[in-house]
Structures are given as structure tokens and as C-alpha cells.
Image (cartoon, rainbow, N blue to C red; front, side, top):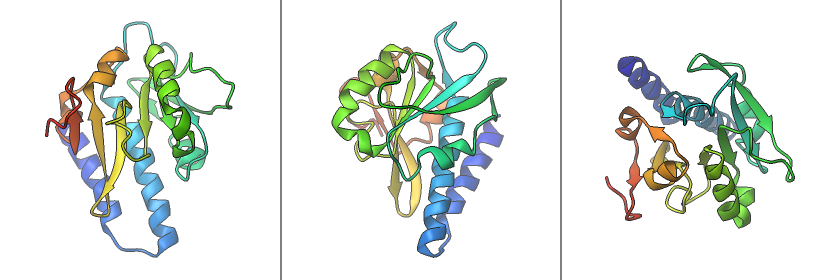
Length: 183
């Protein structure tokens, strides 16, 4: 599985390395981010009994990545369970969410959303700047025209999630209990 994971991530990073026109580049970037979200789920362990029939990916807010790119991974299998993508309304609860993608449009509510999501043992992911450092579990970041990610281990622990060391080894930065980068 390690070799397959490394090959998949190399392929994802290769997609963003090429030059394309602005519209194509945005499309590729969204696809790469969605693929990252899908792959993150493969390397996260939820508390016993949290995941039953499906893994629910809930999307909050308005995002360029948002529903269309993430909907493309709907139905794929993760840990022998189908991935189900849901676009949440402002009033929807996070109770049945296993992964919560929080769009940058929700920045003013991010602290409250993170608290709620982590209480529900949900993996929080976003592409808003400073997300992992601010308490989100995985933040997607763009560096040198490539999509990378940062991980906040304290937030993962608070949510009751275990993140594989294989995923952590590929992170651009890891924030630990001292809220500082460990790499």
C-alpha cells in the first residue's frame, strides 16, 4: 500500500507541475485538492463505531473547490465503505459527517465549526490560509505551484482521530501540542 500511495501522490503533484492556461490550471488544482481529500480518508482512523455504512464527506460554504470537484470522488471506496458527498446548508448539523470540508467563505465561523466537527470525530479539511495552524486538522496549501498539506496533530487528537505516519511523512508541516511546526 505504501508504494501505491507514493505513486498516487506523485501523480497528483505532477498534475499541478505542468503549465496550462488559467482556466485549465484552476480545474486541475481543484481535481488535485479533491484527490487529496479522498486520499486523506484512506489514512485516518476514526473511533470504533463512528463509521458504519458509509464515509460522509460534508461540504460547508461556498468554495471554488466546493461541491463540483468533491462530488467527482462521490461513490469511491474508502476502507471498504462508499464515500458519500453532501453539500450542507447553514442549519445542517455535522452529526453524520466523517470528513468536513470547510470553505474559506466560512472563515468568520471557523472556530465554532471546528469545535462542532471535532466533537463529532470528523476530519476537518480546508484550503483557507492558515487552517491547520488555526486548529483545523488538515490544511491544503499551495507552494511552488504544487498543492501540499499541513497537519495539526493536536486537533486530530482532540477529534479522536489517528493519522497514519505514512500520511504525516508527506506533510509540509506538522503542528504539535506546542502549536509549532515539527518539520
